Image (cartoon, helix red, strand yellow):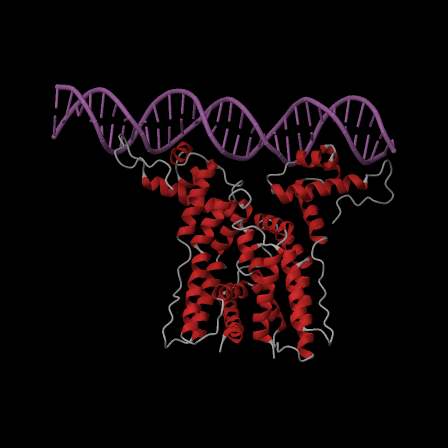
Length: 211
Length: 211
DNA sequence: ATAAATTTACTATACTGGCCAGTATAGCAT
DNA sequence: ATGCTATACTGGCCAGTATAGTAAATTTAT
């Protein structure tokens, strides 16, 4: 995780955490917009308002900085939508709320750029993909499974295989549209489109898994 | 499409089409595996068994060569699966056949690499995405819409909005799994997994859109 | 026809100019 | 004693060009 973990008992002047954050922020921004090869260490230093050597004193090389930046980016993603399900709740509404939240998240400008970056470095950096998927989609998927299981117990849905159903739900939400956005064939969808798509998906899903 | 279209009435020695193809093949291979930045023109020339200047005589610069290579790659993709639907056919079987063909195509090593490449260059090359999507997924999507419309007319399915249903069908097939493969968090699925997934999706789809 | 002249493709190699990762040096700040 | 800045430098990679010569086709002349 951290590079020079000599946090305690270090003699001399301590490293400025603010600089570290500035470097990380600059790196996130630049890597996401310019890609790995398109981002020079000089540019990061300039953007962070810091000398190049300071960058190297915090992060031993470009790869290390890149990994740290992506890690940091993955963490503050994905606001866990509420997967709670009270007895009085209408399943359709809960599902639609989840659908809208999911699409809003996954079709955000930032998520798209992050995903593109991961695709680009996928062959070289498999652990980064695991990191991203674990921090984001995996948790969402897990929450959905729990919800479906509970809905089945409460007799609201008829779901034999929650993981499969969850996968199908999110799959329908993304459709081919998400791929098109990802490869740049289309702009990110607006709020209106997101809502109607979620609506239609919930309809189909309930026809398939409702009682 | 072609760069020097002085095919007819050209004096002197004509360009060797075999060399052109060799260059294009080498470029396809290298760009797909090494990416745009990771592929040098020297490497292309070497791989094609041709001098660097010959590469430049066929393709004026790296961008041009890249575009031509991706175009060539897009063309021989996507074997249009049969979207025919006879009156005696069982819808479930036709759908499953389509599902398996779709997943086999989209989860092939080559498609994945092409998609990754498109993601990487998406911000700079939007027309390439359109090219790819038009040559591949779009046609498949269109075929599926026709099929669903016909099935509805024949009274086999209850589909009000064929485009939406088609999108949902392929979306369910891909699910999150495809994204995981794309970002390198998972290997490409085997034949068995593809078949079971198609099977499950068809079941859900028929529950949602069957009579 | 046959040969010469011409035009263009191609090879091999070397070079230019730019970009950039990473290092070195020297000095100031804490 | 260490963080930090500023600047300059090294060494490598690479797109694209230059040069000089060879090979294959077309055109023109004989």
